[in-house]
Image (cartoon, rainbow, N blue to C red; front, side, top):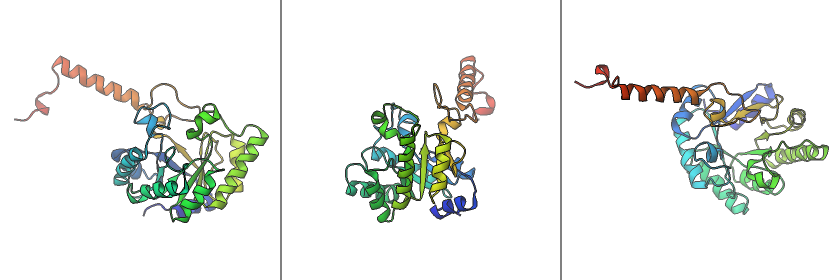
Length: 265
């Protein structure tokens, strides 16, 4: 049976931890679904992890919809959340509703995620009012990377911590069904989790959230270069893929492949 937003609320009420992972294509979504991942986020991290951009800012609605459709074809049980890209909802309420609706109508998603509070509260209210489930996202919000002066942990001062608690509570009242907490101290994440009725999903927010999310390329060890402090690598698929490709190259150049077993007769 497919996961719904009511299931996530039930997880929190029963104290059951749950996971969310990113996916950007059909085969990956199929694997996550088979593994029992209840929530799949088609993240705007697509920009860096698939399209090769330095930040999330350049990715477009059309690119996000293209990949959301692929994920929706691969996953039949997970709750699929489309990540609204930069300037798809900030410009007006009408744009926000229209673009959020496209994720459901054209992309096959079940919900959308958008970043920030403050001005975004009116967007959340309008989108949720149109019958589109909304996942909130506060703390380190990558679409505001330039405004924040880089990817920095948020909520370290007492004033900033209080602001984030207020933002979380405001978003919960405005209509989000869950809330991503990114890049904040674990004690602050615990306070927010206890103060809101909706499930919190942490990434770089410590162990006290209701759920946890990682970018799949980080979890699988596919990324090049360094990894964020909060990203635990459960595999080294980049190394394994490199080894397999090297073995194939050596077999071809030495004449061992294709052999008789891999040839038609």
